[in-house]
Image (cartoon, rainbow, N blue to C red):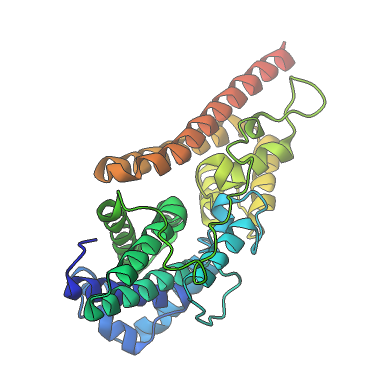
Length: 349
């Protein structure tokens, strides 16, 4: 985030606005024409009407069925929209004077968060033009706040889901560009004060974060009845909640796990799909294989995020949050496998 370059601020503002548009709804021909003018994206942006229709179907498959673009689904445990995270972001929008109307399910949609960054950059550009240092400091501080408190925390995990489930290279490229923009800006804004009010009337006090989520260290190891038998529903829930598991396991991920086991996983809600997969694996004596495949999925995500952290050291504090949960998930999987094999051995005897 080079401060002082109005042209660079304008370029960043345009890119944030374009990305916001791409996450909010499928592209049209005008958007594709814009994408073809951007060197890093041009090669993956199609030109034909048939290709456009395919992208519209792909948009729904990614964001409507697999990679849900709402912060609350990644950081809250309710697995619902309009929870605490959504309200925190809505309050930030209010404080920043951002009231763009969009037809999305909750205010913490990624498109709105990127839209807020575009809005704040427009204010930055105006402050540079008017040579207004107070407004400039405020706009940059709110950008930093949006990055640190929202975008930088959850989007690296979300964008990994997009890359896993996307069939069209355009959406993989958009995910990569989004990640680079957010973490490049986080790196450049590191050291800015998190919040500089322009006036006590314009900006309200910073909302307190919700307490008690750090944490659910015991959620992965909840027991039912006695210390030797975990409740399957609790295990499945631990795998499905991103802030417990350390990653977002999509419906396509669950389907792929079933495919590797030779088990068809009908398309349902993620919780039920994972429960059905465990039940089917038990019937066909494939539990150890299922646990092995889950461990591989967690391991792949761990190393993906480790690479992101190595490239962007400024993301380390956020990375620890996700990497520690991935480590606990893998430990749970290994312990479950050990317990299952021990129980199975006793049954044979």
